[in-house]
Image 1 (cartoon, rainbow, N blue to C red):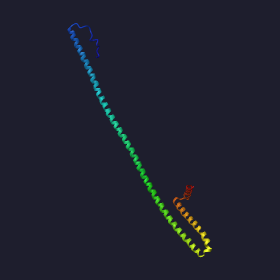
Image 2 (image 1 turned 90 degrees about the vertical axis):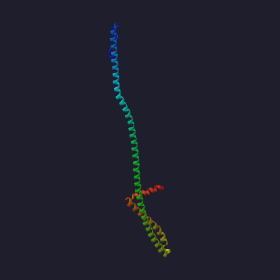
Image 3 (image 1 turned 180 degrees about the horizontal axis):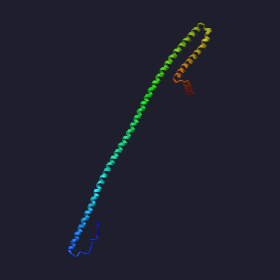
Image 4 (image 1 turned 180 degrees about the vertical axis):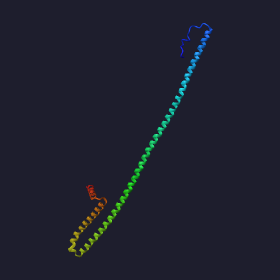
Length: 194
């Protein structure tokens, strides 16, 4: 192929020998050119085989990469779901603990209120006994002390109310350490009523 085709087109052939030589040379050149073409095709083919192998490997890698991406996304989603579940479980347990503590405090306060009420009822009973004693003694001289007994009954109620207030104040001061808790609860009560 690298030769000129002009070499083959020389002067007209005059003898059979020249014609035979010309034909042999032509045949040799065609054979060489054909061999050279086939060698180049073989070289191209040998270069194509590794390229085809690489291309096939890339296709396999692409499928593997897609599968790996899918696995990673699934793992990330499952990880997020597990984190949400663990957070919910933690919040639930914390809520249970807070509720348990609040129930314990509520029970303790209820017990203390019952004890205070019992003590107050004892004091009220004692004061009622004193009032009854005064009433009985006043009945001995009904006319002279009837006005005095009427006046002492409101005083007994005032005394009971003030003692109850003192007990409540002492309880709140003991629990919360300040008198402002009572004053705050009074102002809240006034707002609700008003």
